[in-house]
Image (cartoon, rainbow, N blue to C red; front, side):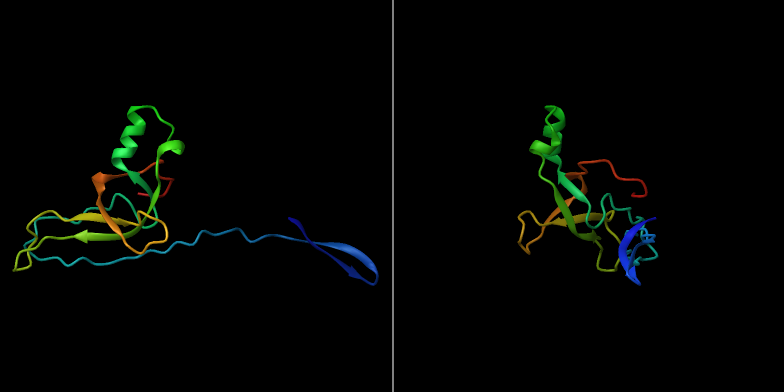
Amino acid sequence: MHARQTVEAFGIPYVEYGHDEPEVEQRICIEFTPHTHHLDDYGIPEPAFKFCDEVAMRQQYDHCVENNIDFSEELDIFRICAMELVERRSKSGVLTDAPYWRYGIRYARGTRELIWFEEDELARPLPPTEGEF
């Protein structure tokens, strides 16, 4: 409980106390049902990253790790702005290869252009927080 405001009644000031509502982190879940064919031999993999995750380029990340360089000095951080499930299918609709995820980031701030990367080209600069996959 903390003081919210000081009010006056009949010329006498008094402090009004109250409880703050706890801040609730807003979460938005986007679900989709991928098209499946009864002859598909492949499952849909869980994405390694999710929308708005912070990522770094794998080469730059590995360079920092190998040379014991502080991430905050050398690592460029980007946000996942888009995700795409890549499914290669035959003309009959059967998957011809295992599906995989691609991730779109804006390499330069203020641009609309997305550059697409596969999971192995990106790295998570910090470990995921509890509750993330």
